[in-house]
Amino acid sequence: MTFPVHRPRRLRRSEALRGLVRETRLSAQGLVYPMFACPGTKVRTEVSSMPGVFQQSVDQIVEECREVADLGVPAVLLFGLPEHKDETGSEAAAAHGAVQRAIEAIRKAKLNLLVVTDVCLCEYTSHGHCGVVKDGEVLNDPSLALLAEAALSHARAGADIVAPSDMMDGRVAAIRQKLDQKGFADVAILSYAAKYCSAFYGPFREAAESAPQFGDRRGYQMDPANAREALREVALDLEEGADIIMVKPALPYLDVIQRVRERFDVPVAAYNVSAEFSMVKAAAQKGWIDEQRIVLEIMTSIQRAGASIILTYHAKDVARWLKAC
Ligand code: PBG
Image (cartoon, rainbow, N blue to C red; front, side, top):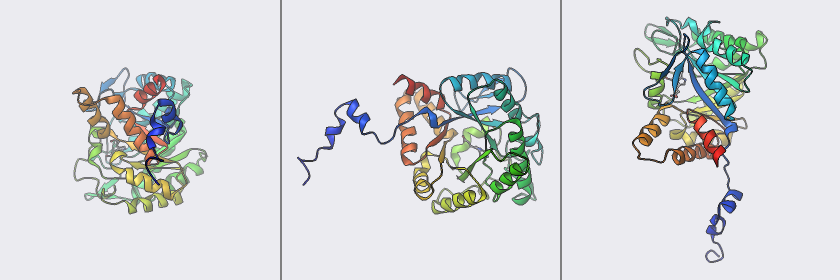
């Protein structure tokens, strides 16, 4: 028996009813706000393809972090720009690097904020690749020690969570081992487990000045055509000791988020990446879309697919809008 006994519209008649039966409830508690730390003081340079996103020196980062914390966003993700780039990205692990100093400054300011750090070499290497390069090849195993050193330098500075994004095989194990050895067993690892080789990172590479100077990242990041392989990547990272696993990008990979959520009982994060953000911003600036409704719908869809943690450049706006409604 269907109609007229069954009428799904009964539960859509008022906001109170809709709220009562809502399956996905957005909250600022699952948001992480990405930020870009650069050398210098009083530097605040807007990224042209990402309105409202800045490369900032440590003093400015702390100010924005205060705002982030006040809005009820619980965490920031820090990326760093070095003073100098070199072949091995040596500044990635420098105690005086922009990220390391930003972590210390946020800690010193006693902000109620979790600090997550991106662990990768691409912002720090002269060739822009995420690992060590020899004869035009990105070498896997020699990159692991450098990534582990970078993660250790973040832990030493006071990071709560380190997030390797390089996609070298074995990097989670290398980082876990190094952190444990040096007394940082409590620092968690959020691994970019299923990270696709995506055109959606375009604007980020302007923000982080990390575009590869030759070739591309297809030899280490995942093929966008593969979903089953993502489950294998996630399984491997969990075996190696990842605490939280991430799918990236988010919107074009909702199916992957859902499959990962169904298969694994660990916290699942999704990265709503730079071009996902820039496309919305550009259309909103042209007056073609309702930015608030579009963004909240995107956030809802990512969470509905199965991600309980969302890394997004919209985090501050989302927190503001959620407070208002
Ligand atoms: C570093 C890294 C990238 C992003 C996060 N970490 C870029 C890349 O892999 O080229 C992309 C984030 C974004 O687009 O917002 N490897």
